[in-house]
Amino acid sequence: MTRRPHHRRPQRPKTVLHGRIRDRADCFRCVGCRLDVPLDAPGTAHRNHCPHCLASLHVDHRVPGDRASACRGRMEALGLCARDDGEWMIIHECLSCGELGTNRAAGDDNPLVLVRLALRPLRDTRRAAHVLATL
Image 1: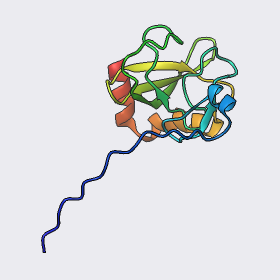
Image 2: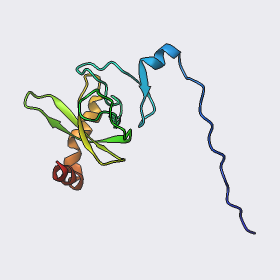
Image 3: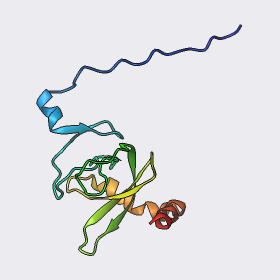
């Protein structure tokens, strides 16, 4: 018995907005955990990542908040670094183009996820060496 290849129809665009319309203008949907994320971020002027899973989109080109990048790829949180003043910065890598970027940690970021991210180089030394080599 020969099986025919199963061809899927292309998915139609979604026209249904979940939640209230005014709520959608004040938030965005995370590409990682799919939760709604408010645009207001304590401690920073521009929300660049999800406070729950720290995933981001490659939207900024040179200046934080310029939203001028054409890539729009998903950015994965690789690690943390600290500024001289003690402020934590999240290091992201774009999964589409490979560019590295830093985002200021916001006051509402999940502290458990931040600590796990800070300890990741101790657990996986290959990834830490990759990040250091690209900087």
